[in-house]
Amino acid sequence: MTAEHLDGNALAGPLAEIFAVDVTAATGRCASCGLAGPIASLHVYGPEPGLVARCSGCEEVVLRLVRGPGVAWLDLRGAVSLRVSLPDPPDLPDLPDLPDLPG
Amino acid sequence: MAIVSRGFHGRPRAGGDRLPPGQYLVDDFPVLSAGPTPRVPTDRWEFVIDTESGQTHRWSWQDLMALPSQTPTVDIHCVTRWSKLDTTWEGVSLDVLFEDVETAADYALVHSYGGYTTNLPLEELLDGKAWIAHRFDGEELAPVHGGPARLLVPHLYLWKSAKWVRGIRLLNEDWPGFWETAGYHNFGDPWLEQRYEDD
Ligand SMILES: [Zn+2]
Image (cartoon, rainbow over all chains, first blue to last red; front, side, top):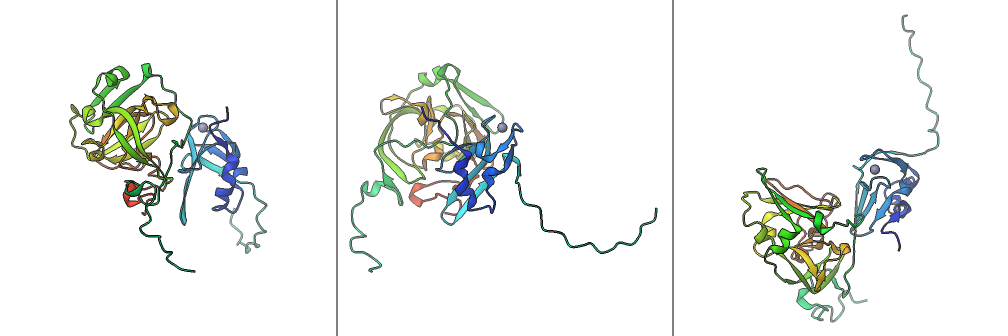
């Protein structure tokens, strides 16, 4: 029997329309049970009427994405955070010298 | 290239005037899911109506089976554009379930085993427009189609006909449900093509 759901890699294309980074590689933390893991490990239902990505631990909804003509709705309320790996930010400009502080 | 092709108007579509705009006919019964299919044994199934004043009305599966049932034949329309004509169901009219429910609420939030919700004005559930359906096409309603029982509100897009229905909360204010909070239309009339929130 095939699984009822897809894995989170099914979100890569639809989320690439919205985000400049590959969000499936990001680490998401489930707002319901606290489990953290790659978005690619979520259990994904859909694609119609919308993509529903559920926590692999507790099956609560972590992310929903509905794509209509000319518009997308993204609901991330089931995710506490997304941790995205990025290169170091460009060097910050030097700060102006501050006056010596007493003490 | 002609902008309007001859015959575009007036050519009879399959389904004729029973097919809402933007829909096509299917013969099978597509399954769309937003989560794992709940498996609810009927000996643990219950249906509840909670009123805005805090009254709770409860029915066991046996209670439901003891109520008079109807056998509506209806056309159903999914927001993903498929329609199916002349589907045959058996279920209990919500008019029967609401007989002893005292309420002045305007809104209903339908909730399901598995956590799904959908909202609609209470009047859309009454006057012969909605059922708790437990048989389809002469057989017990299969779990993938919402069994043991689902709501059936065929005059609205099918996402309002909540599968695995567990109860109805009556509310003085509208409370958008699962798809209604994710871009889909709050009412969902297929004849007005109310698919997305701005339609
Ligand atoms: Zn979880």
